[in-house]
Image (cartoon, rainbow, N blue to C red; front, side):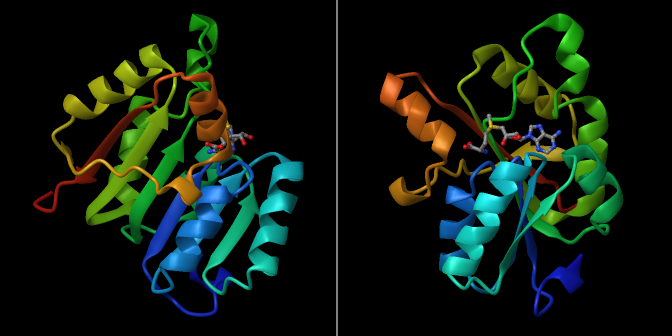
Length: 181
Ligand SMILES: C[S@@+](CC[C@H](N)C(=O)[O-])C[C@H]1O[C@@H](n2cnc3c(N)ncnc32)[C@H](O)[C@@H]1O
């Protein structure tokens, strides 16, 4: 994974990075960490790649790959300092819940890839999915609540801008991998 970048630095993941508004802006402000966007839609990946090139970001990259495959097989153990999942697809129908990012197995993967003290930040407009995410973390003693990260105005993702414009509430939570584990 480190070979994607010009130098090894702590890694930040944006899972389902969409068009990359958050990824590009954060990476430009945080040159001492490497930012990797993971996105499966080719059109969006191309947009993010163009943004990275235009801004000449040495510390941002995007890969087109299924997120579960990327985090499980491509990310080395204990190298991620922060991971963002903003507006993950909620898959509201019960028969589609198995497609959700947040399932118990995902927490095992997070435990493997996060540095001790490394953190995960989630935002969603979907109240039921938000509760599912919170319950998963609250019941798992490998993680503890940490300071909630809200993006600056110019970092807000495309989906957040859409939901905010409609006046829909945005739910956020953040958890850190316990350093003692
Ligand atoms: C609702 S959009 C949110 C995009 C962006 N995070 C934002 O807030 O604007 C969800 C994004 O995650 C991507 N995505 C959904 N499931 C994915 C998966 N399994 N692997 C990779 N990308 C995925 C979608 O293509 C889409 O761009």
